[in-house]
Length: 205
Ligand SMILES: C[S@@+](CC[C@H](N)C(=O)[O-])C[C@H]1O[C@@H](n2cnc3c(N)ncnc32)[C@H](O)[C@@H]1O
Image (cartoon, rainbow, N blue to C red; front, side, top):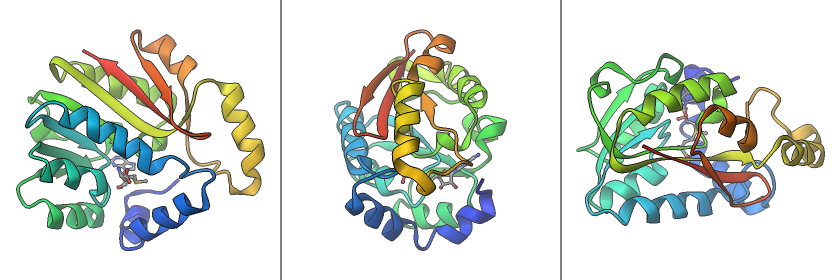
């Protein structure tokens, strides 16, 4: 499991690494660009939306939202990732903080039109994901939504099929969600499959 220092070390190479992984086409990055694209379209359908990005990384998606006029907030626990993202979005309100402890102090009293997390929540166990999503639901404005794009599956059988196909490539330190399990904890959760290993979960207010 990568800690914040592990992500600090990955920050410089992260964008190249993801691009290469996506070009190869399989687990874990198949569908990465499409996940970003669908979330970008959903968020920008609302003009100047207030959006909180959790685990924003180098800001690949967040900076597009910022450039499209969104009011951007974010939380990540890697200082290097935050520096890379802040350089692209000087007016964004980005904070350091571990998602396992919930939202960072300055974000706690705020509400958002969208809360997004792409390729970040698989670092949390399923109970940690459910607890965080429950907390976040209370931070949504009327008509708002939480959009989680990640390595994720409709059910445990689909996850197992991907694990077998991935062989030694499968990362045993990450916690990929199976939608049917999480949906039992979070009524109203929806799932759309994007690729063999990627999906988007949506949770309204
Ligand atoms: C794989 S990157 C994804 C970055 C970006 N959202 C994307 O779509 O490419 C995961 C990001 O989540 C952050 N992260 C992982 N675990 C975290 C945690 N427990 N608390 C806060 N940030 C975390 C990492 O520092 C990293 O920037």
